[in-house]
Image: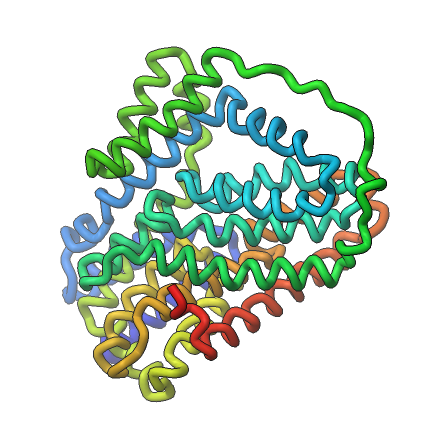
Length: 419
């Protein structure tokens, strides 16, 4: 069997094994790459070691370490409480506010998953206070994180830049954030209408005023540190990972955060998954496997359908694997090949379609986003009585499918080319 076909089958196999056995796909990928190196002679052991992207690992670790320190003393959670408390009586603005909170928290650095946790923490109390359907608020908040996750300083943004930059495609953040915003804003409106959010009146808002504590000195310093990190990246052109490391260590020296606790909170499984899959993907690239996939897709593509087909493929793959850990490292390298084999194919639109379709597939309860929504909803004694976990699972998966199909249709009409 041709080595590139064999490698593609190995990638498919480890995704299936990881999904069924709940084993980190990055670990499986490194093990598979090692077996291939020793067993075939096509690759060497050093290819496995050098295939592990240490630069990306350090960058992602720096970002997650920094925001772990910042979040340790509760400054971000308190800030969000203060913001939402100002708008409790402006009931019409609550869904918009939750959408914006999700987008901003994800976009300033932590990425999608930490922002989802904030949205989930706010969504259920806000549903009680306003009368909005809790699933509506949680989905809208999560959709907001999907556009914020593609800024240049998030783990997702850094990963995509590291893949597309060497191919000559830089500054994709504006296109991805803008294009994904179109999709999630429209989807949020659809979700709002479906759950009859327009029927909720201002009178339904609780009149109880919750007393919120003031910021402490360490919390203020932690919030200001975010601005310091961003200034270093924007004005001093520092690597976002290294800038995050520097600021995080200074915060730890000031006793803002516990290094042991913060290190435990770093999503090591995600970091290993991203960089581990990258080892096998590099084997596939060097063997011509990515070029093979690109040629197959190109045979059914035209410039008008390229973004839609790429996005649909990413959405389907994301139902069974991690977007940042598997879909982006696998699909993004294909884009450059498609640009050569399908003249006129819109690279920026394809990248955006892959990003937003893979993200929206995450509404599935089999993914992190959907699982967080389920746990937040079922964790509330009152709401848990209204919808069974099985029914909620089906409902969220249906939304996942609808959103992916909707995103593909937007790609088909060229909506992601506006920015």
